[in-house]
Length: 462
Ligand SMILES: Cc1cc2nc3c(=O)[nH]c(=O)nc-3n(C[C@H](O)[C@H](O)[C@H](O)COP(=O)(O)OP(=O)(O)OC[C@H]3O[C@@H](n4cnc5c(N)ncnc54)[C@H](O)[C@@H]3O)c2cc1C
Ligand code: SF4
Image 1 (cartoon, helix red, strand yellow):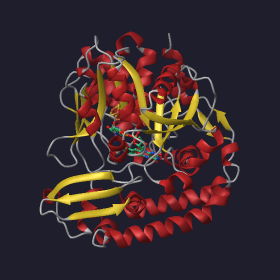
Image 2 (cartoon, rainbow, N blue to C red):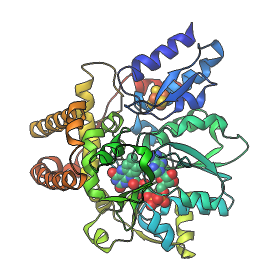
Image 3 (cartoon, helix red, strand yellow):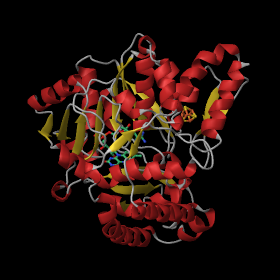
Image 4 (cartoon, rainbow, N blue to C red):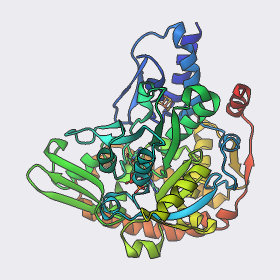
């Protein structure tokens, strides 16, 4: 029976080999067939009833739009309206550095508060009925859910970045076809929605705008508990509130306990959690910026801006409508906005772009010897032997750090000490590997490749 074959394919291609991106589409497209269930390796779809023939169309859609099978970005990028070609950032119309002019919005934001300012403008100007954004459930620490709202105060409240693998597409079927939505997600969520919009335009036209945040690394659940243990707090039950990017940009990890204790750690220090908890999905995707979005927003890292504090976003506009919205907001003095140069935009994130464009390619090539992997349609024209060696070392560090034994030992060490050591090692590692990783990287060519996944997209296009 075809439905069983399709379910089996989701398991054999994606879930069993550990390629699930935790996006939630399996639950979001089907009628009570899958449910996302929590696990130490992130939320995973679980079959909750036997598939029937009625499920076939939805199962086919999941297989087409599942990030865990990879996307032919080069092929799909031709289907969005952006007019400037760029294989690192994705195609775009304009690049900006921006920030909200509202002191409170900017202060509470991850970078410059652009995401929430755009959502509020879309609601106020009646371009959408609802915003779909990730939020923490009330009084449930580290329990996140997609909030579908038209309320300005609720949108304003949904600031900051959540560095934990969390589905956002699991509520797709609850969206009303006669309403208009803007969806905020990570690059893989947005790519999946873009595929649905391209291949099933009538059924997904209610999802009007796709807003992506940049995503470098994400973490499995357990990172905050690890941080707490190193600070003498035994469990989450003692926690009242967690902020991932508290206060002045780039912000602090701040934990407030029920006994009024406050723990905080600088953003660059708490990156020490990454090797212990990094999720596999962010190691096997080349998409850092959300290349198939209408607009993408990240931190505008630059020594000058970081020194000045306050918070700045880098903005990639890939559509004429967002160019217009941004410039209107600038005119009304709701935001500050300045065009940014392509080279500077890429240099701001050259480390992470390299990690995704070269690193992911090497990691996937290695994994492909063991089983199914996500397939993409571009590969770097050349990778040096030194770069391959660096990848082996990165892989070894992650494997060692992710083991239960290592975590148990390091969880006892104070986060300030670990953070300080990590930051020091990171700087040393960066200076050693920079010549190999960055030399000529931004001038690198990528070659188009053909594979079964690309063929699937070509065959399906009407
Ligand atoms: C896991 C992760 C990794 C990131 N890595 C990088 C990076 O390497 N470099 C970089 O420049 N930027 C990265 N970002 C993006 C950055 O942290 C900011 O989200 C972005 O700059 C937008 O800032 P803002 O001030 O405009 O957003 P705000 O106005 O503060 O709004 C934030 C919005 O992001 C949404 N959101 C938060 N977390 C998630 C999530 N996990 N999934 C879906 N939606 C979410 C919120 O619901 C809210 O709508 C990352 C974000 C996340 C969540
Ligand atoms: S990545 Fe998304 S669509 Fe693919 S198996 Fe996981 S939850 Fe389902």
